[in-house]
Image (cartoon, rainbow, N blue to C red; front, side, top):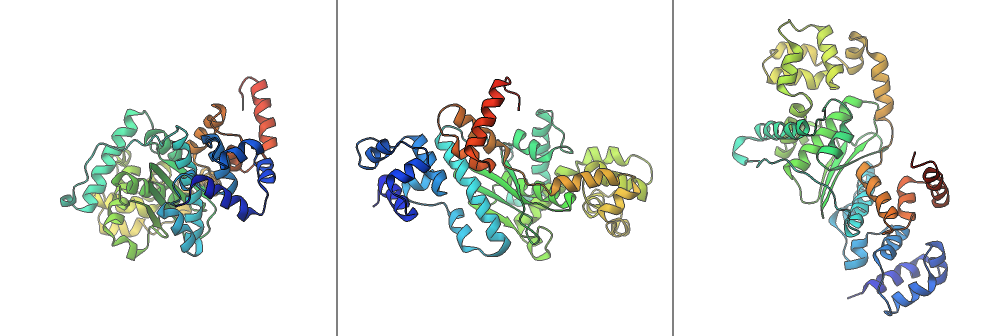
Length: 367
């Protein structure tokens, strides 16, 4: 069985660099690294973090020689799903490494046992109510800043990557990691529903490894029990019954008021129509009528096209997982890691970042 030193030596050999050149490239002391690899002294957690980041492997692999199933899936899946899994693999590895440095995932599941006898849609509704209670205790609003809300209230990381059409999102879990990865899109309502849908998978603990949703609205996928539960959760979480009934009020629903509700709750007309049908606010005919409206039509009817355009621009932007960013910087500032992992996460040059942080410190900590 290979040792940590064997695995590090193998990586250096595969890189084509000498030990001295690798140490220089990674900002490590060549003499110290040589002593560690010869068994004279152990590799520190900082050393391992630098080596893992330099070679794009996880600290877990350096320590044990084994990789998580997600890393294997990322190499064996093709198409946009492969790109999504590769991105998830990187974020999961970073979170696992942070855990070993003393920065575990701050995951806070809801206190609810999902019982199989209740029916999957009912389970999703109950799970959403429990999640909304957790949101209320934190004083957060589910209508605003949903990625930030999920990170703050539940402690799951949320990332958005430009993965193109044909992929909505995934939920990765296991090894102490909880991650939601979404694709950038010009459809903010769909992205928002996908985010809530993936949160439902995490809170229900649906998979031991990774839950991949190429298209959360695909009819075949909807037949999966866990998909039914996640969709029910998303609908009830984004459109809480009491809040929705109060918003509808006692007045007769019109196209104008329906369009306003879509904008207020930031959901698609189809999602809102089916939720109102579920709550018996409208009948099947009304649902069929309203669900045909597009997101842009709803915004135009409500006089909120500019607001929609701003949301579209936001949904098309890449987003780094906020908690990973926070903890990676904290590890650097605590001297548990070098600046290199933080720079590579941000996608910036390490020397430029060092200068930026120095300027920030000179300015009293202002960004």
